[in-house]
Image 1 (cartoon, one colour):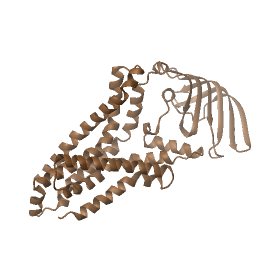
Image 2 (image 1 turned 180 degrees about the vertical axis):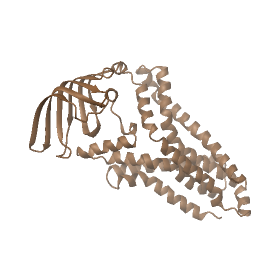
Image 3 (image 1 turned 90 degrees about the vertical axis):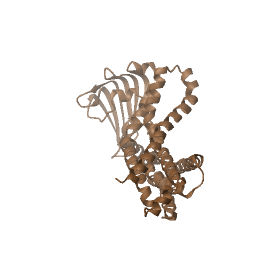
Length: 358
């Protein structure tokens, strides 16, 4: 690695690390100010608040990655431009493209890191929600009179769940199907127990109403129903149903399949799933855009760099919301909606790069 590469990488990483640690702290201070009254009124303790913000860190750092990459690229190039280091490099036969190459390499590396960490964020979000949940029933592994939305369109209606014992009392499990491939059924029973060996529920002394086709209804009484795919664990049922942001890529895929089979419109969730891949690559694209943008503004110091980064961030976040709305409405395909902001900034970055005097 050349001395110049090490210098550029060092400058970039220094600013990146400051931002990726500082931006989440800023997010948390703003969020705490907004939530403080609710925490006090709900009786949330100090240790719960600390745990909540600890589990929020992966999500906030994921949001901070593109911002930190943008600031690092803009500050690094702006500093080199103001100090005539870019001019000196060009005089020595080194093009602007070659100067930017280490930053693009870092941007791609950070994108791949963000992609590898993206499946950790939903679990951390779920734990953050649980940290400030003061439901006393759940604290004792018992839940009463609740409805739970499971996989494949199943809904559990449960009188009493004891997660530690692995039992349910007075249950009903319903699914609204669409035909033979995805049939409608309803299971009701006074008891169910969790089979740890097979990792599924065994429903006892109940009744099954099965509708494989529109005008065909089968009613069956049973002693044990153990072949049914009721695989939501006792502690899954103990927890609140996951929101899309609490699901990883695979879980969201199964949820989308269930929505499709039940006849609902899953386009909004499909956009969210595609964003789990598209958003991490923002880090690379934002460096491609930010570096030539900073080089084109030769005057101004830190204030101008921050202003450019802030304006770019606002525009990018706005485009994400526009893409989500267009995808959810079916105006454009969900995958295109998720990659819509990246596409605009990628081609804008290429355009800015082409105008740089090398």
